[in-house]
Image (cartoon, rainbow, N blue to C red; front, side):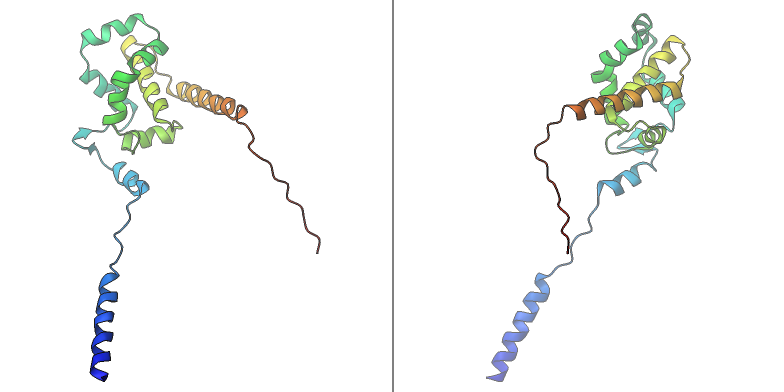
Length: 171
């Protein structure tokens, strides 16, 4: 009878120990971001170091014939028209959403939203094509101020669902 209980105990022990596997290591987006910002290539695509590198890459990728119509249009119009073409290409290939060394560079400048990064680069590209000064710091300030204003305006439209009043209990 004692051997029977010993065998039952050992079988139960083996199943409980075997059933508790160690959890797989969790990889967060933050660690992916931290890995991506160190790489010069992601998914086979070269990632620019900075604005000058990005602009030279855009000049390399486009033909003079493709850049010619941009010279007759305002930079804001170009940014809107190219947002879902060249802009999406930049956002996807330069990995603005998941992080890359270039998106990290732009975040350090103060541009944190991917749509703002795209708009920022399209405006700078237009200025480069037209031959206007880039004025990077002024453009960063303008885009950040516009985003802040937009967020504040959205907050004003929020409706209060409920309010709570906490009463201090006197002991």
